[in-house]
Length: 394
Ligand code: PMM
Image (cartoon, rainbow, N blue to C red):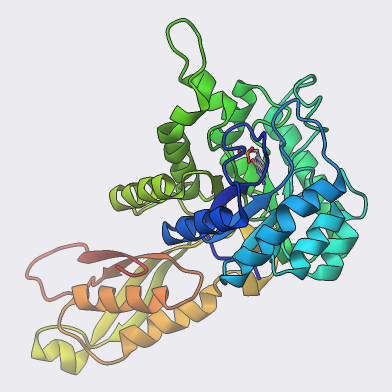
């Protein structure tokens, strides 16, 4: 089962040399405490890794990786925490799932271990496929792209197709642009500026920017010295929160609380992230709404325009009606509301229709315009229109 968006994935690196937080945990107990505290601060997944992927890192043996991660995965899962295993090895993925992990995060997108997809398909768990062009030791030696966005999108789609071909279910595939992996600073920014292109394939998107080198470069001092890794947190949290607002399924971060705070503040200012929509215009139906007695007795025609905000990216890909809202059903419900129990005000009618529309599971926003062209107004006039815009939960 995939955790619902927005996901803040807390990083737990059990490596002595990870670039930002290596060597933090000297015992299973302190790692469990760190995971519990991240969950208390808003993490819905803890991503546990035993092998460093910092640029230039050497690979470690399978035995070392297993010894580092499995006891910790087991203890953290025993707390009921949703754990993802950050590994390029199918043996580690399988051992971690056996002790309770529920998801695999493979930075190589299945390229490092030819068995990875077969094993994950058999285990039936979600997998993150990150964009990767080669091992950490040499990944920054070739960072040439004609178009980073187009190439990363197409290479990720290739990995998704390979995963599907190996029997992994479509709903279990999450993609990740691999920020900092075989990419220069400008490639990373270009990818983040073009999130829509990365989302267009219809897969949930995970993004990891936390404390990465391109943020250090952005925050360089006057002499051009990059900002130290420990003081990149404000930029990390701000960028991660923004990505969640732009439609990323999840962000992978070190400081869960900072990211969660930044996201809450952004949502308070802008509860209206850019979303796709379906519009139903000019739905005409007879009703008896109005304050005056003759309106109740004789009735009149009302007309409604509805804008429904929802993500259509999944349906756009699958071409399956079940993945979107059925507009014929929405139209029926609007008509039933207009011809149903009379209310005095078209403000109330608009409110009721907006609430009905938000009851359709995919719809997160409804803007309803109710027209009353024969309203009891003296003299010539064109129309009376009331507009109600409503978010789910507002
Ligand atoms: N980055 C790192 C490690 N694992 N996994 C995913 N899916 N995406 C990432 O961007 C990613 C990752 C390297 O960062 P770290 O050393 O701080 O964990």
